[in-house]
Image (cartoon, rainbow, N blue to C red):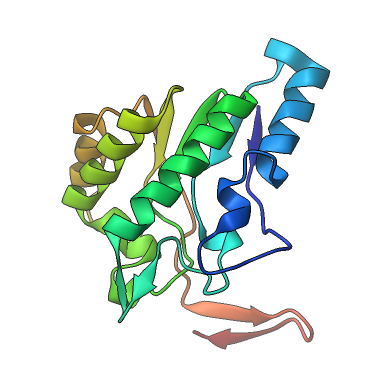
Length: 178
């Protein structure tokens, strides 16, 4: 199993590198599938944060993610990955990027209605299976898991980045409260 996620060299507000059929991830998918064929299962992450200059998973304005502007970009990204040969797509609802205090990134995975809506959207535009990665940063994982299922997810992953009460300064290896 190979999973691809990228931090693109070229970033812009519209995530152009993420939606490019000849971009980094589709090129890597084609190379992996050419080298290993069906012996290798390749899943790709459908997320814009690695290709936007603002670093958010969606198109933000005024502290809110704008679904109408974000969904066409994610659709183009999903199509590019599937057409390149990806065997499946991952929706990361525990992504620690963005501004989770304003409903972006990890906070999306804490709202079952958002999980279901985004899963339904991805299934509508995807030609390959969709796996939903749920956030562990919630008191009860069942509502988002049920929402993913209701949205048509082919699989769920029940682990992701866990918020920490400490952070590490990697230069000094010193721990500090977050």
